[in-house]
Image 1 (cartoon, rainbow, N blue to C red):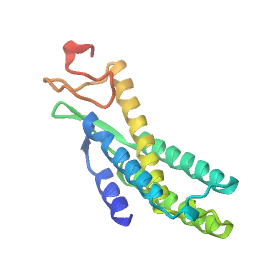
Image 2 (cartoon, rainbow, N blue to C red):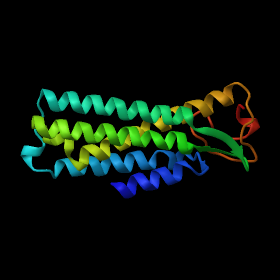
Image 3 (cartoon, helix red, strand yellow):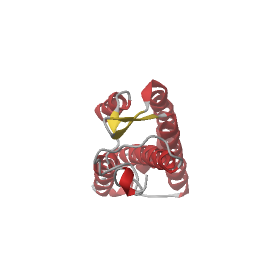
Image 4 (tube, rainbow, N blue to C red):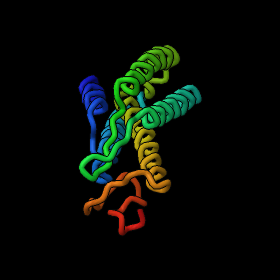
Length: 173
């Protein structure tokens, strides 16, 4: 888990191309691994009660919200005809917020018997939700910049962050 977060923070501090084939890869992979991990957990660790559901919904919304904030804090630029983004250190520090909250939630969940909340599968799903929040905001920001006439990638670049981003100046920029 630490290695996954370390990799994400490292990549957030570097300019990364917003390639539609790649931007969704990490959230999907983490979600699939999280779900498989949950399915293989012992039955008593998968039980859901009101406390577990409340904690899952709360931490899920927090993960999504912090991811959206990371996306909002991210810088966007066009370099070599392609959209690039980086969250930077300010956005990366938000991981500290999630980790502190996560430790507190895990302690509370353990004390209340909501074992599912403390499982690796749930943690991976929360990281996936964080990445989804960031990606949705980045895609929206890049598409809004396109719609208001901000400088756009061209020179035959055929991909972009959102579905409205499909090519150079002759394709609706």
